[in-house]
Length: 71
Image 1 (cartoon, rainbow, N blue to C red):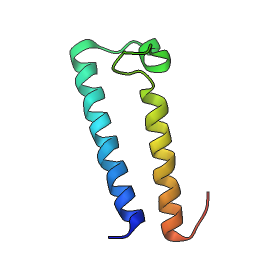
Image 2: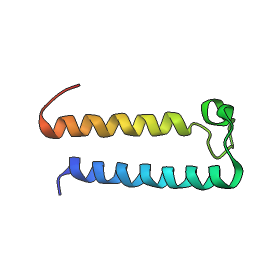
Image 3: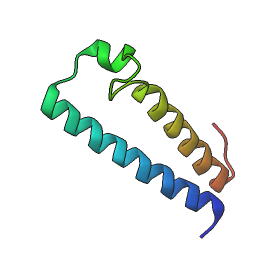
Image 4: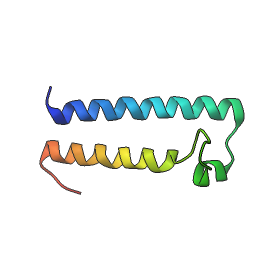
């Protein structure tokens, strides 16, 4: 497996785990918009949006790199 494919697989696994934890938290506690958009340090959703966005962007970059295309 290439380095790109390995990185993509790891990113996807991490993103799925993040989604799973988010859903579990939301089902148990509910999620207020401010928790998602401006969560405080120590909160389970702190910087969730930012981290997930960075991972998504990297995944897109890897897919373009793999296909020889660009955004």
